[in-house]
Length: 255
Image 1 (cartoon, rainbow, N blue to C red):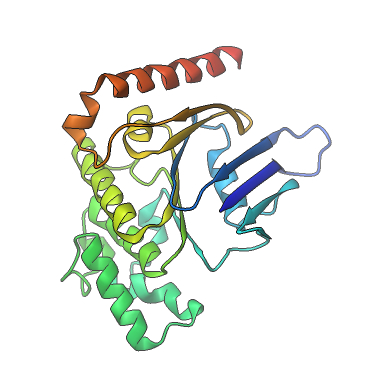
Image 2 (cartoon, rainbow, N blue to C red):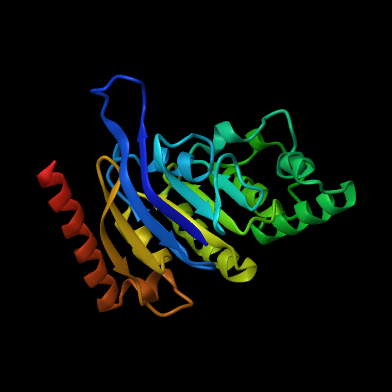
């Protein structure tokens, strides 16, 4: 579904400028849940901006269903890390969710239906008339996820979306995301620096080194559906966690 081929991104025109993304190649199958794991500053966000068409690559290419990504694709949604800045505070929750739908050609009736369905899916039915600033951080991030879902994407990019919430809220949002993934059948590329989160959510984890390059790939064969307690007690979970931690530590030592 998604192909990244020898992707490279360098900011600036200086010949000595260091790349943020260097020779990055990987593929994502339709319906797959892939987590991208890496230390802060390794280029994960820059990579996502290139995948989404928000930033042009210096070289290489990104293909979605075989078509080069040269701008934001109609079949893709992006959930940003800073939910408080991605929501429009002067708009109600429902209007925030519905806002991008006009650009995809939804009629008013279709937009209302998609908005209601998305808010129900993230557990915010009845909150449509509230404003983002009236909600908790976790609820605001649910609004951002609902907006991405209402757009009815085939692939969803997520940039450390749960990094700014407390541990309990983070666990609840992880479980919510898994339910959404199973219900809507959307393909997800999820960037995180949290090893436990990556193992818990993913079918496959890619470990990046700086500048963003795939250095390690781990298949996650843990049974589904997953639960915070049951899954994290499995010896296989601990084994995968150790494997990924070891990979990250090797990259940091090399850096």
